Length: 253
Image 1 (spheres, helix red, strand yellow):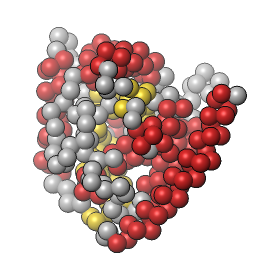
Image 2 (image 1 turned 90 degrees about the vertical axis):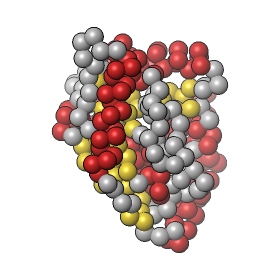
Image 3 (image 1 turned 180 degrees about the vertical axis):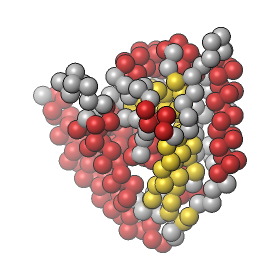
Image 4 (image 1 turned 120 degrees about the vertical axis):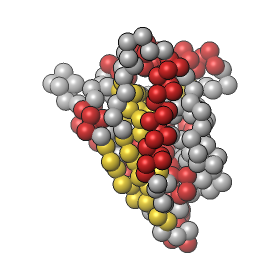
């Protein structure tokens, strides 16, 4: 009904609840987010949101402060690694894929992309395909760019600064501090532009933005992360033992 009345996805009650839940998770972790959105990124009716990826914190940051209501493409293992975030995301329409089966994962993405974009949402794809262990930008994979060309939709680069410093792969919980989320001007494939050319042009925008920012991560201190970590564990316990069974009973019942 709300969609028929022209209400944007970002204003939907369920989406508002998801954003507040994700922001709460970031707040509990002691992380502050400075967001800078390009005006055109906020006005896009539907787009592929393309964040760089070097930390678990990336998904939380983009989910909490997106320029457009996001729908994620994520690896299936995250459903049980971070159930308090990705199970809810799956129930709300995000798409888990089996990366061990390339044919099946490509099929899932190709089927989901037109539906997500048609609803006026941002399809979140991490172009590097995996987290960077060093925090440096990795080579991009072609999947998102094939979708952009085939669906004739824009790509909105999202450059994240500081997430790797606050939550590197070796840590179970984030270190309190400040990160920066910066959405750039949306990019649309030009007439006759190939997937490889679009990929190269988009990645160059990331490189330019990273060089121009010269970000220095503000860390509040690892000791202060003890209490947030304990709260995270408590939230995870409550979610796994109380919320997940309730959700499954409603789905099956």
